[in-house]
Image 1 (tube, rainbow, N blue to C red):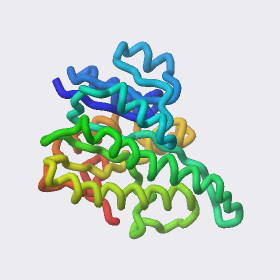
Image 2: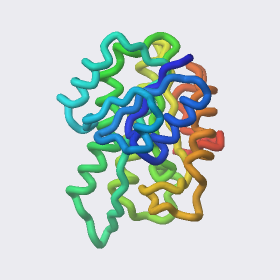
Image 3: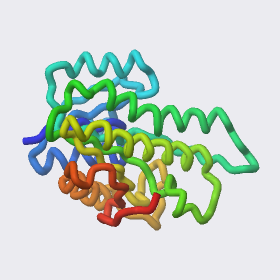
Length: 221
């Protein structure tokens, strides 16, 4: 039984990670600001009241987890605000950087003592953060923050390799969640997480730092 920690676990992809991990016999630790009823119903360990944009809050999480070895850290928490060129909301752009890019790096740094040789770190980024794949523009805060997260993941892959820790940079696909307005043109959280877990399972030091779609496709930067 492996131990996984999942941030942003109260709903959507984060909740589905916890559900599938529990279903397959692994141990999931759910981290969130406020747990949902469906998350509580899983009966797993929940660490709530955690704000990944706040140093003290993340430090408190690290204290709660002292002595807990993590096999996999899944940095899933994120936000999406639509920001166009005609309506550049710089406060929103900054917030998305704080949550989507800086937050996962803050959590990873704080929980490094819980990781060891053979552990894995997964960063939930987005294909919208691919420069080569940007054919439509817009979404400034989200796109920019996800580019930054992917770069952090690539640097982490290099810096953590000597410690035997591998890093996956993952795009879930277009998923039917609250973040996407429950789009009907996407895939279900169940399908997305099934693919994402397959990518994490296949992660090694040799392929660490790769940018993957949940379907296993290697994505362009």
